[in-house]
Image (cartoon, rainbow, N blue to C red):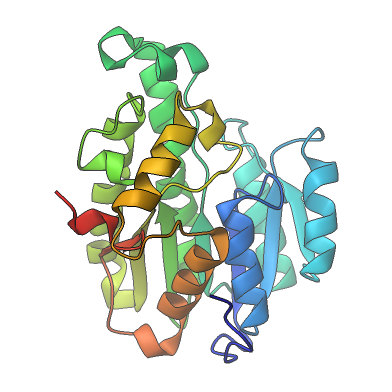
Length: 260
């Protein structure tokens, strides 16, 4: 169902969206929804190989800030926030939509996951959100909202999700603890749990097409969600109309979560 002319709930807001790889990325859906609702959006790209895919999207969004960000590279995150501080002087919204696990550790089952692979997955997929929040919070002088992307594999076994299940469980817990620590500053934190969405990252999961088909059959609404469903949810939660909502894991999955 198309959503027409969303209200400008985020007029004047400044939003940083991390994790756009291409036009199919959940992060792009978030950035587009924020832009449509009136926010000014800063976006990042992973590296020079990814830049040609992200730069046209940044232009479409009229993003005044487009910078590289590989959270595993020392200094890049700090450089990004130095630019945001210099150009904007504040921040209202942060979307963390990045995750990674080495292919062998992701596809080999949790029992066979290496210590190094687990640590790398935890650092990029979870701890980087803490680092971003630490840098973003001082810029949210009038309050704000932070979001991290999770998946139901954090709470129930999803075949082939493997190491990312424990990692996403840690990320959801991180969101709750950050919501507690930052609440008195008027900063709200949510974990967003979309149903399966066909993104580049999801393509690394074995039998993902089967999961998509099963989801469409089992979800009460009978349809798959898309990147804009996720984006509009984040945009609403970032708005003043959701000012007393924080610390939740928000399921954007057509009701799949309620099914046994």
